[in-house]
Length: 176
Image 1 (cartoon, rainbow, N blue to C red):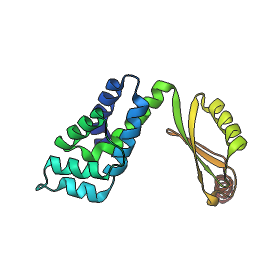
Image 2: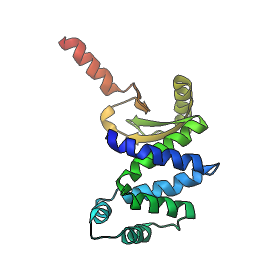
Image 3: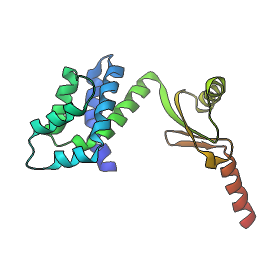
Image 4: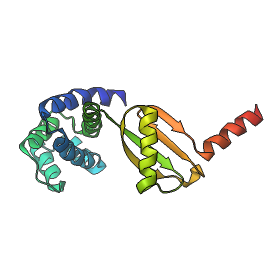
């Protein structure tokens, strides 16, 4: 949703600019807030016109496991008072992207037919970092329907070397 991204961008940028070296700590509490904000029950409660911002804040903080810092508390109050709680997950995504850009990193989501661990994962990561020309934070999802090989998504780039993709290419070539 482009509108949500547009709403979230100024909040993410302001939080990032004010982080001053503690962006990774901010990312931790921001991700925790985003997980709670994604809950439909909380959104429904926050959207109720009879509920005050203090009640929404109270419910929000009662669900969170850790104690919020002053920065986190102020940020959450700002979002609630401006009716922007729905944008919190997108704010967290954009903040994460800004932190990665500052550190010269990108997120790489690897889908593999088989588990990738230890030395195998390190080897794949090294090859992918060379291929994409930047450091990568990798996460691996097991997708047995790939049959073999891997599928890698880095930003808007996709590298698909799976058996499933090759079979699809063969199917298209044979039916053309």
